[in-house]
Image 1 (tube, chains in turn yellow, brown):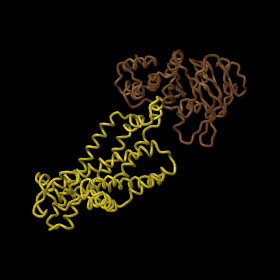
Image 2 (cartoon, rainbow over the protein chains, first blue to last red; image 1 turned 60 degrees about the vertical axis):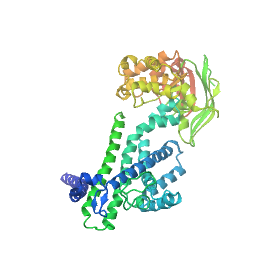
Image 3 (cartoon, rainbow over the protein chains, first blue to last red; image 1 turned 30 degrees about the vertical axis):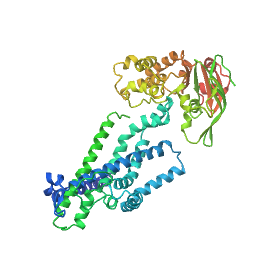
Image 4 (spheres, chains in turn brown, cyan; image 1 turned 180 degrees about the vertical axis):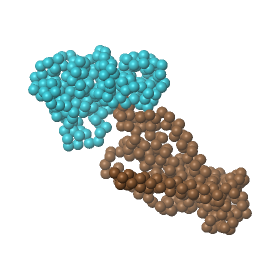
Amino acid sequence: MKWRYFKQSVFFSLVRASALIITLALGGIIFYIFYNGYSVISWDFITKPPTDSMTKGGIMPAIIGTIYLTLGAIAIGLPLGIASAVYLTEYARQGKVVRAIKIGINCLAGVPSVVFGLFGLGFFVIFLKFGSSILAGSLTLGFLILPTIIGASEEALKSVPQTFREASLSLGVSKWQTTYRIVLPNALPGILTGSILGIGRAAGETAPIMFTAAAFFTSKLPGSVFDEVMALPYHVYVLSTAGTNIEATRPIQFGTVLVLVAVVLGIDLIAIIIRGYMRRNKRW
Amino acid sequence: MVVMGGKEIIQLDDVNFYYGECRALSNISMKFVKNKVTALIGPSGCGKSTLLRVLNRMNDLIDGTKVEGKIFFEGKNIYAPDVDPVEIRRKIGMVFQKPNPFPKTIYNNISYGPKLAGLGVEDMDTLVEQSLRQAVLWDEVKNILNKSAMNLSGGQQQRLCIARALAMKPDVLLMDEPTSALDPISTAKIEELIEALKKDYTIIIVTHNMQQAARISDETAFFYMGNLIEYNKTEKIFTNPDMKQTEDYITGRFG
């Protein structure tokens, strides 16, 4: 008897410790970034462009650039991803073809982001002549987050009870109307939950935008989707590897990372609020 | 073929149904009579629910199923290539085993079908009231029409589902064990409702409850292993069945 209790308490301690380690790691990272970066955060830092060869001044163009690129990636990835998931779960005949497509999507999720970057460079920037631009970068990032969004959407669509579909179809409502009026609205909160992960990834990736969208330095704001932009992750990369004075700009690097985390959380927050609003009727 | 008195509305002509390789219905030929309640009885897996779902082409939705034979609804084969199953389902409504209201308001649950089917309803409020009155639910919900249907009790939800089906003004109402998830009081209400609805609708009901079949139906069909064993007036089936299997099932000797 006692031995069983002992085993139980050991096991509980282990899982509790795992949870604690994760929390500590996350807290540690956030604290470290905050501790090293907060000193440069000021109103000017987030509203002014960099000066003195990017060793002073703010990071406003990079903030704007990252917001544009992330929103662009969502605008491309979300509709395409949801549409693919709707096809795969609601319309396609389950069988070999669908399974092959799903394996392909999973493989896509495992492709290193630099490969997406090179693909974006070859296809969007050079072949389609978009140049290094918001459009090319958003498309590349949109494709990067596509597997995440498709996966989340599939799960969300599958979790909508089959009885809802049957009820709607039995009323002589067409399949498309059933999907559009019943299935999708009930799946949207779940789709958004999964997409939040994609948003974070799109905002934080450096490699895909390096060749397709990000400018080393530009003080002016983009005038159209064909303009290059600065972006937060790329700015950090530049400052910490190729800047004019790497050591002296450490606080700016951490400050930029801090702002990046804030921007990602801000976009997530909007998604969470929308999800909460849509979920208020969910009860099954 | 068993012939019943009265005007037929649905006629099955040598119908076979397959789930993949597995034959779920074998050579079913029967007629359903207009404005009557027909009960389909038999042990689990005998094909009665399958038969019900063949009648409004709900089985189309399952991959790998196949129908052979003809099913005439008002003289037209509903499995003819030029027939749109969506049109069939507008005329042949269905109520499911478990109440399945949409996570919408009570009002929108009723208006959903007519609105999307493009029935061109001019006065939706009247249609909603009418449908809820027909399902004897109006008095209970008239003040909470804009509340979520999910707040209703199981019995109320099932009557809402009946009202939702009635709002489409179908000719036939298919009911798949509509009271099996309900308490006796709710069950009694639904049985009363079925009795009243038969004036305007043809009702085909699958039930596991022998007393229910005996109480509410005019005709009863007994199925076993995908075969139609006996089909006759309910009185006859429950007092003096022709087949030994039917008698054994009804008296509880197997099933």
